[in-house]
Amino acid sequence: MVKQNSYQSTPIQKLKKSLNSNTIFMKRDDLLPFSFGGNKARKALLFFEEMEKQYCDCVVTYGSSSSNHCRIVANFAASKNVQCIIISPTEISKTTYNSKMMELFGAEIIYCQVSEVKNTIDRQLAKLRSKGYKPYFIQGGGHGDIGTKAYIEAYEEICKYELEKNIYFDYIFHTTGTGTTQAGLICGQVIHNDKREIVGISNARSNPYGGQVVLDSVNSYLKSIGKRIVTLEAINFVDDYILDGYGTYNENILNTIKEVFSLEGIPLDTTYTGKGFWGMKEYIKNNNIIGKNILFIHTGGTPLFFDNFGELKK
Image 1 (cartoon, helix red, strand yellow):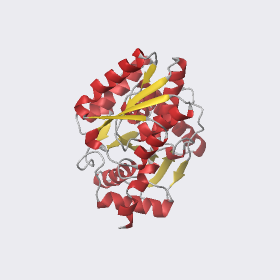
Image 2 (tube, rainbow, N blue to C red):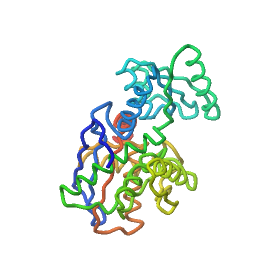
Image 3 (spheres, one colour):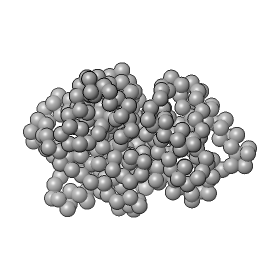
Image 4 (tube, rainbow, N blue to C red):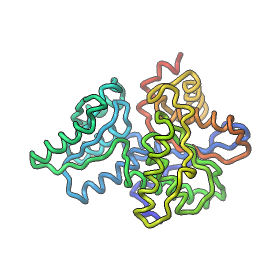
């Protein structure tokens, strides 16, 4: 059993509209009580606990201008009055509500080309150390064993809900990006010896790389706790719905977001959750899944909902 973090379990709600005679539920991680919630808030809480244990006094991370991770790390840093430096690639840089909030929280944003991200991070860490700081580095998206652990805790919450409500989710869907959300869910499945299907709908990465990254994260954590490792067959990383990659969307995704918001009052976004929910619907239809209990994990990103609000009205 994994020790629960200081957040209470997020609610799971049954959606009004079924799909292909399946009953759809949603775990509302967007309601975690910090900075619009989401999977990045779950992970950041654990990262900042570790940062304090190591007596670090500033934080460095990286991500795009649309990054929920960077926005939440910047917010956590501001709440603890520590310096935050974000390395951001110029190739995917635009003004978003997330980027505006990073600036609001006082984060220092350093832009560079994608090919220079690693070197820029190394230089910034060295520069901070030379000035007497003890920087704490968080990989983009909260990648690593700590990020994985956060979603083992979420899996524990799901199992507890099932026990209390006498229900079993045959499928768990979510949007998968850097991979630790999916890795944590799979680790939870291994720990519980469950047979359900965990499906990660990729928002950008393709196979075989995307699936391999998740597999590496799973086995890194399992090794750390002395559990058996798994093979690639345990990873259902679906890259059929990435369109042209990160941040791209189509009319079907916009219609999905509009429908879910209108019927359920739940905001999704075009970069992460809306793309994942649309991909889930397509996967269910294409694989003829019928009569199952299906859980979709809302991994957050509410500020991004407003970035494309004008498109929804069209």
